[in-house]
Amino acid sequence: MKRLGKRRLRVDLRERPELLLVPAVFVVTMLAWEFAVPAFGIDDYVLPRPSQIVDALRTQLADPLFWGI
Image (cartoon, rainbow, N blue to C red; front, side):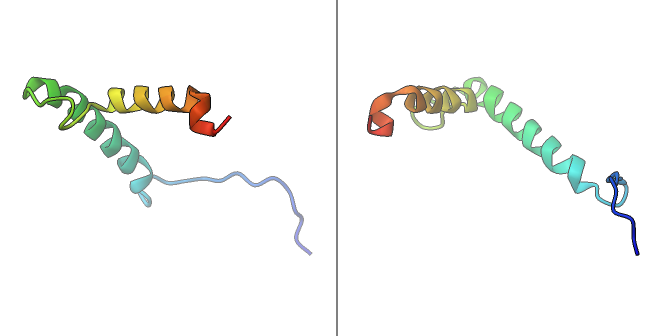
């Protein structure tokens, strides 16, 4: 009979590089988007920066009308 105990999950990044690459690509993409929009002079109504999207989402979620209260 096997003894059930705490097991440590060991992840070898050489075998599963996507565990590091996917978040890294996401962060690089968000940073490039954040700084490229004003650098290329793209209007905010055409392509808002990620920080503006997060601010708008935060504002909407804080509004009781959004929740129907």
